View (cartoon, rainbow, N blue to C red):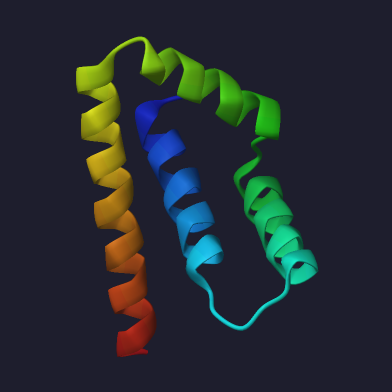
Length: 80
């Protein structure tokens, strides 16, 4: 999985995690929808995360990109 694909998926999952007022079942449904829409399995995410963990500098850069993208998504949602 490319870093850009990982960032995109993880940013969406982060946004799902931050949604207030939904129960765990709805949160899981939304997470599953993100993965399906992106064509990614939990195992693929796990493998990508393990690879990133081998290179802390790269992992930090990717995590910062996830944070920025999630923030941009939040800003876009507010602007609508």
